[in-house]
Length: 406
Image 1 (cartoon, rainbow, N blue to C red):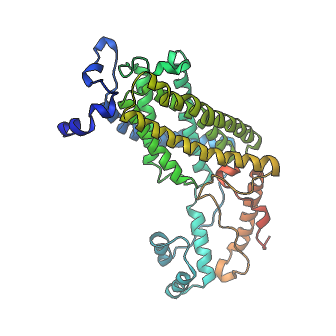
Image 2 (image 1 turned 60 degrees about the vertical axis):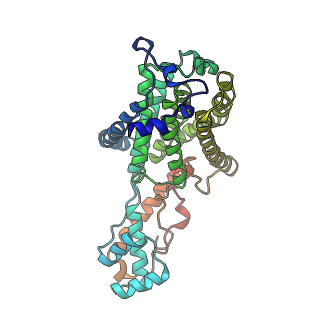
Image 3 (image 1 turned 90 degrees about the vertical axis):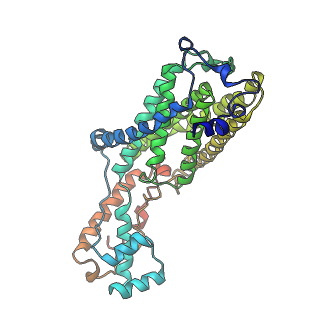
């Protein structure tokens, strides 16, 4: 296997500029540490360690902190157990068609209204709570904040932080310090943990874009480390972390309905995101990898592959910038956000259907409780519907759809 990898994968023309061989970049112990592909093996146990650490963090820190900030969860009706409907819900569809509802009527002996109500409440039952979304946002906030602070402290005194041409001086024979080595390993381990847990996290409308972003980021980190693009890779990670922790903090205060704090943080996030992702990233980083680097070596496969990954990230930046600008435009000129641009797929309640007319046999003694519960939920939501970050979490304005029973 090692011979096969050496023959096909680790060919010099893939990883090194023309005229340079593996023997030319060998370093002695006193010269420093040279990035080796086998170092990336440590990111897998780090990813699982992050998953365990996140589980502990959410229960010991995030949940108590959410209670301190006043995060409230919606009260949801627990559906009665109906085995046939439950089996259909899990195996077939969460939103049955009319023909499927008719078939279920024959199988269960229930009315169509009862079946529609059961599926509606069952979907709401599975939707993530505000506490769950707060815990997810607080975990990412903690990591991005620590990562950005540590990264900035480790890079601010380097020559290539201020002069990007220094990223290529002496390339590819550039030693990596222990601090930057661990910065790389922890960043890759964290993004790998996000990719492994993406199926259990809150799904959003840009779910596919998020998966592409995680995969592109992992390829970018792994390839830049193997090709010793470490200096540029560190700058890329720092640029991303600079705005990510602001977004997560704004989400946290949104779930706690701290409207003014949320709005202020979102404005700061929008400015930092647009400046770093649409100005600094393409003009400084992509320019130095595509143009400045050619002053030091001739293009090779690694040059093209690395720049393609950077361009994929830039396309995603433009996509998200468009959503943010449209969201800010609606808020500034219309005074409210009518529709979420990057919302949680599972956050929207099925409360727009008529609740009256279900009859005592349908709901029984739950009728009065449902009226109170939906009134409480509608008042709670009205506190949050003026927050700019509604556009990021899809809290729908329920005030205009209160049930007739009220």
